Amino acid sequence: MPFHPVPRPRGPKPSRIAASQLLDAAQAVFAQEGLQAASLRAIARKAGCDPSLIYYHFASKEVLFQAVLARRFPAVLADMHLLADPADARPTALRLWDVLLIYHRHLKDDPGMRALIRGEIVRGAEGLSPLLADQIRPLTASISQVFAQGIARGEVRPEIQPMLATFFLAKMQLEILDVLPTVLPVLMDVPPEAAVMTGMRAWLDIFWRGVALDPSQPLPPLPSPCD
Amino acid sequence: MPFHPVPRPRGPKPSRIAASQLLDAAQAVFAQEGLQAASLRAIARKAGCDPSLIYYHFASKEVLFQAVLARRFPAVLADMHLLADPADARPTALRLWDVLLIYHRHLKDDPGMRALIRGEIVRGAEGLSPLLADQIRPLTASISQVFAQGIARGEVRPEIQPMLATFFLAKMQLEILDVLPTVLPVLMDVPPEAAVMTGMRAWLDIFWRGVALDPSQPLPPLPSPCD
DNA sequence: CTCCTATTTCAACAGGTGTTGAATAATGGG
DNA sequence: CCCATTATTCAACACCTGTTGAAATAGGAG
Image (cartoon, rainbow over all chains, first blue to last red):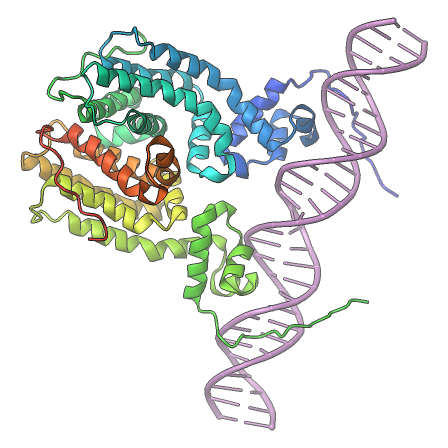
């Protein structure tokens, strides 16, 4: 004889769980575990619902993952697209600084998203790359245009491959954002709260000299994001 | 009534499986799947034995993984230590290229190892497992010495912080090794088998110009690892 | 030949995984 | 008030995981 001590009520709870809440939970778990290791049960637990509910909103784990990405990317993409405007006559170094700032602005409050992007990029091409690639491609294209325009304006060495330079600049930015606050205070005499800005400037300082047609010219003054 | 069609013989096979063979198989599987995703059954299958046999030689999956690492790390450390010899009078750019080559030589076949190092570094300085920290610290110290010697010899800009430069150089190297073969063929017209070398050279080209006292001087010819 | 020990396998455990189909409850419209 | 739709849960499936205890075997020692 089966014993059901407290047959909890089925059906919708008083407070419904919106798809956005599921996305929040999914993002958090995906960020910590990665796509492969993250379990739907853990996501459901975090969202406070049954794993099956996920299948009501999303066709599969993979679709859920893609939905998490699709929620954040358009805003970053829009900013980056704006930056690539050919009419923008500011020095290329300054525009590249803006690239870093855009990354920082959109991802600083979202360590989950950073870990997610980083993890999935690193985790290898086979499984998930196609999903992520479709979102990332237009983004890197915009940055690449800034380099191409820099070459045309005689500010960037013509041997520089815009796409490759984009890859180096963006990848490093993505990788160091998380660790700067813990690493920089150890490496240099920098308080943790200033570590991100200091580290980003130091990185652009080296990178820009490596890419500029005239590296003897110092970086222009770089505005802080609060300006 | 259970039916045992062919009760295969138990006991040792004609050719015994040494612990080193298990380590080989484990390394191969860990390399392809990573620590978490690799299954003992897959390792056993590769080694041609039963999963239980692993427990005869190693206490757990984690112990097996550590044994795989312990086999690799000392060699990297020794190479890097040799490179930091102050008597080494070669151009600093060439020595930095050697840093990249050492990383590449020792880690190219071992994404599991790379993933572990990367993960531990991201997790922050204090969270680093003591075993790994003790092995990484002298490694970064060696690279840092090369930068310091470069400054002393008037080849590297004196403003460059050796530890910070080490951080940028080594972190990027660690991060791009995995993705170059899949990313570079897309970004540039480079076949996958040449992607790693091409990408490493391009990265050092930019980085060295960013760090050098006289960036107008081009990189010296960089030997391939086969030389 | 006999026994012992090191090595190897088998079978099972307890738990986790993505996924599905049916059942159920709340909600809103007619 | 009823009824259809929507949101949610339950229970189960088939499979995979790390791990363990006992059984079995081969080879060498006596």
